[in-house]
Image (cartoon, rainbow, N blue to C red; front, side, top):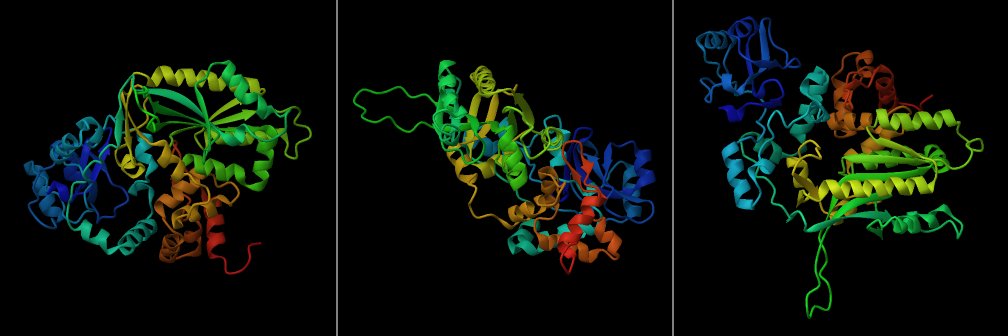
Length: 465
């Protein structure tokens, strides 16, 4: 059955199903496919994702051999192997029925089409072609040992229902508000630059609100409009969703100190994992840089790396007034962009399942509530093993948040990484295990130097030299 085969959504072939067949016969058939290079086969055989229109709905055998598959291709029918990974939930009928029952259109709840899935989104989760054989065996062993429920679910193909929306804000029912972290407005004395922030924003007529932000210094929310009612003593709490833009403001002296004490990398990691997809780094000059303990060239390189390697948008300003001008322009821009949109609120876990590539031109946006965003971004909350593992990796010089995220996506815990090391036969193979792991939008390799450093950190019996 198609629902028992692994599924790939690709820009070239659309929806593809994983099959095993003879390479020469497949090429002669003229069918559209994408090769799965990581799965090893005997000579002449190959695993490929076959385009939906070229794959049959039913399977003619449980474990087809190469000869039977080759003859099937030549006859115009290609059975799908039942020995593949459990399928991605992609039943369009069940999805559309669930979407209609929950009040959400099928466009928002259905599996995205190939035109809606960008290459950057596909590369965010490493494909099996990016994994070595030892990496594959480690990932499989970790997934099999994590929970018996997962093994049970892999034996049957189920359609995952789309999440129910918490609420929907239609155009005209909300206003875009700039939220300012209260740490940006307090402290520093009467002559501090912080004291200029709120007056300048008020002078510019910015619709804003000062509150505690667990991550970032500024962000924008869409807040529900409520008119007062006659006889109502207290206004009900207005519902809010947080937009995908968050700003971290750094003065040059603060940037210098944060690079020295490790806050710089830790803050970037938290921003990238907070659920907002457009992080902005606002770098503000502060007098002469001659008195700083880090050279100006090093500070400049750090901001460039933040934009190129970490995918942040970096905005440089001369002083607090120019920073306020930027926040004012951004607020008015987002007000004009989002005012005609329909905003649908979901819980974060459900949002991760249905969220599509970021596009401001879309008429509908799926967002999380501000309350959940702030609760899940608490700095001192209990960290999962995966989060702690990523924070450990960030302590390695040259290992950015993007690289740590790529490693922890493949190896969820240090135990999974140790399992992969144990599979390697030679010490040199262990040192190069992570060298070809892809990271970032450009899908660059982590490289042998960092791979060796990670191996030394976790596998050296004595102190590191």
